[in-house]
Image (cartoon, one colour):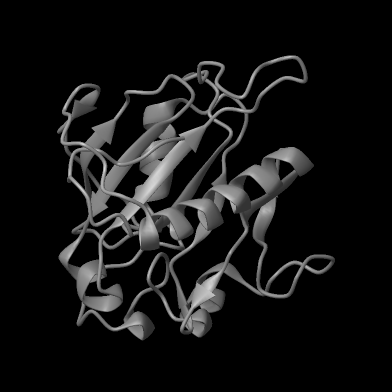
Length: 205
């Protein structure tokens, strides 16, 4: 799981850097779908639409204080404020948590073994306000699925929508571009939509 932890954090950092200065991707709709999946249920980390203030949210887009009210204190033994939740696989539910200006907008979410891709999408959505939905699925690479999550509440709170990239754990002999196992998704990395490029091309794995 150490490799998974490094990959999740690396994805967040690389995507942030690429989005801030990289060239826009071509407008290519191949491998992209525009199905919509909405946030549902009310688990401990979910949020209802409100005034768009980070203090009114408890999951993605929340202030650090609101996040910790919902998820508990960070786990000892890691960088302070970076790992939260119950043990999952060889890590915890939330790892690689990186606040920006006191707001939680970058983290990775680990899933229990044998979590399907659609189940994993719903778990991620459960940390968003109830007005959030998956509006674009970019599946042009076999190694991952990247989705756009749109929410007026989140856009008001953070200034942008969000993206989430879903991965399955790789075996020791598998190449990095090995196809994702959609019946056993290991984790997702969630971060703001930095791209500024075509709406239907959400980047690379």
